[in-house]
Image (cartoon, helix red, strand yellow):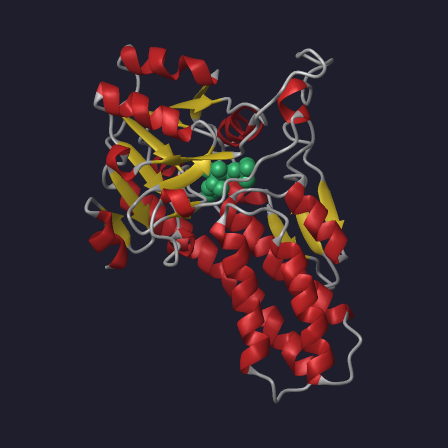
Length: 349
Ligand code: MRU
């Protein structure tokens, strides 16, 4: 297998002056990296999905806060914190649904609040360490998520996934794709179906790309083909990521995930949601409380097409995520273990 970790989704530049991301809007045609230096660069990269996937945007925002903190000109703690908080709130507004963005920013802010007696250069160093810790924890969590899920799968199984919850969406390996990579290393030979994932084609552009690059047996299908491959008996489990998990087990993930869950339920196929515990939102009781990001209508009508594919002026609804009700979920798999229904109890444990 090609080493997938050669691709660096998000990292700090060697001189610590920039956040370096693999520009995911240019994949699969080109593996090119972008250096983000200002808060505006970082906001823009997150908003435009140059870096995307719930854990990866958390890591990018944490590194971003560190890089921006280095640039703050402040002679007192209070001046430093005022500017820090302004940038933090600005970055938090880039995308509303994935809890990891705000969770990572809050962790960075706590470092500043907990060390109000330190000088600015010490604060900046502590922010560096916290951002690195967020990245390291993310990578370690993904490995453990992969191991837990692998314990539920058998060699040779057909697996279906939606969107991209792979190496490109996290610091290393992925969440939903982690068991596939670990299985590949151990010769499990999974056969993966990747939904293309309209409208932004994360499945076609990113999942198919990274699995193929790693030598995994992957077949790309349009979103509306999922029922057909399930009906043929080619899928024995569905593995998807998550952007926010409510305490009752409802899960927000890429638009179309709930439809896949309905199909899996109909055909009696286990539906596994994989994500780090940082994606579980303790403040969120159920899916109705999750804010769903709505995006530019052009993403539906013309983005990725050679020319516009819908009549001008037609009304377009473009929610980026949907909520899969807990009743359709077989298990939620985190780095701490496998949670089954009733999720109120298992998630708390
Ligand atoms: O809009 P995106 O591409 O950021 O959406 C990504 C997803 O929905 C992923 O499944 C989710 O963030 C989990 S990534 C490990």
